[in-house]
Image 1 (cartoon, protein in one colour):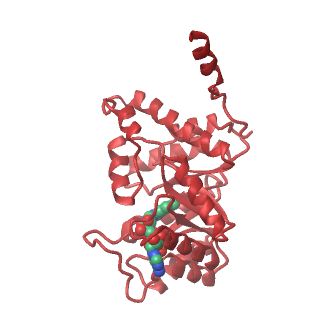
Image 2 (image 1 turned 90 degrees about the horizontal axis):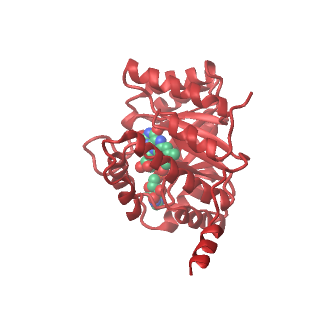
Image 3 (image 1 turned 45 degrees about the vertical axis):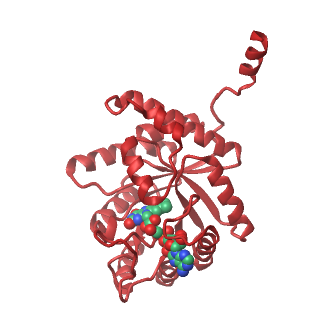
Length: 301
Ligand code: FAD
């Protein structure tokens, strides 16, 4: 019995790292204070040697960070030398206003937009397009393509968008985003690789052949991830709650647990053929750096 158990244990593959034949991108959010701006910049500099293909900066709810997003995007591209992508939403703005923001980016040499519908502004529970604004992401992508020949990434939801009537409508909407000019979809975060694989299969079956890049969320705060999951419809597996239990006041132990979970998720995605990963860094470099390291990435000379 003991011998059989040992045999079984040895058959469980050891995580010995991966060859690093992957491409990564990093997402940041616009800082709200000087101190947060410093943290962001340190993170950008820490992650830069890993050679990301792009770094993106989010657009605050309701377009509230227009200036700050713009500033960070331009700085990342011009000072850090990383191709930068600007997130842009339809919320609270007319088509002309959105087009104007896009024209500004183009004039500054920014060629990549992450085009999103956005969430309803605070207080509203249901999304309603701005009168005179772009109706949704498909509409926005088509409009941006008329402004200039941007590279466009869009959002995808392996575990369904909360507004989605059903899985097929979500896939049809994603297909429409590619047809309108997106060349890449970045997914909402998820913790079950099976939901990504099932989604990828459905997308392929629907004739989508653009990139679908998993969005990886390393857990900084489990409470925050639980909150976000409630809003965006991502399921948190029961085992995760157990793993983070009692670690609220132990940031270092928590970080080790987080890295292990995210590396394991990426390892399984890699085994399923995924070679591109997008990291929700939350402006902190260390976890994303460690995970990239385990995936085999090393600083480029
Ligand atoms: P859309 O693709 O327009 O629609 C969302 C969903 O609504 C669809 O998936 C579908 O289920 C349903 N739907 C819409 N139209 C139809 C239709 N005609 N028929 C059937 N179903 C329909 N938000 C921000 O405010 N700022 C950011 O910077 C930001 N960055 C993000 C980055 C990523 C990678 C992701 C995944 C999300 C991001 N978000 C951001 C959140 C995003 O704005 C919300 O998830 C929003 O609710 C939907 O945006 P979308 O572009 O997916 O919308």
